[in-house]
Length: 303
Image (cartoon, rainbow, N blue to C red; front, side, top):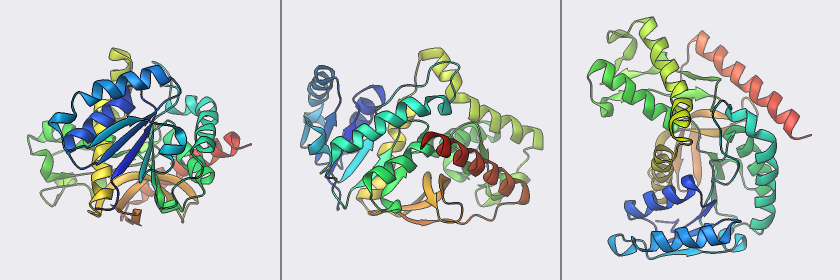
């Protein structure tokens, strides 16, 4: 078990809920929280500390950015939140500046650290984080479409009255409006999902429902954080125990020279390998369109 100290930058809803989720998993020795609002961060740490007797986590501390830079896993949740009516890409300029400032404060960064980006638009900001950190591409991951994939599995489960654990389906492309479902590779109990009674219209409905869920939750309660926190703790588990599980994340594609959401094997060094799914022609085109959008946004942002 290599990674035992996790730093979370940003003690808002996502950051504090992620800390709590990690504590409940009982596989982290030390948690570090950092936020520019030091009073709020101290309050979150003290509140979370009340849960320590019920977990195996040894300590949770409010520390400096420099302390966080020495952690084994660094999770970045800080940034402006997505508001009702906003797309994730609408946040790019303000959060671009915030992320660059954070990485300046984290230096020198542990050269063995794995960085997990959460701040939106996560695909663009993960690429910027890798450049700022100067860590290898495999050690900088965006927590991209795992949550969308889990939502999709839940929706399919409800439609087919089948166990979620029997459903395997990936959401790929941009973590945002240019995401798509790789239906041609989806299975239920090993059988192609396209042969399990879902019509083309059913699949379109499920895909749109998956894409719109985040906007509907934001409209109802202002933000999302429980599912995000669960996905982040899941990623950390695969890293800490070197489980080498296949998880859809925002990762650097040598083929497309951009961070985009693809299924990847996640282990102790971050991304071990990107899985080359046998997509059909329509899905390949959607992936290329997502890459084109992300490249255009990045070029505009990095000027």
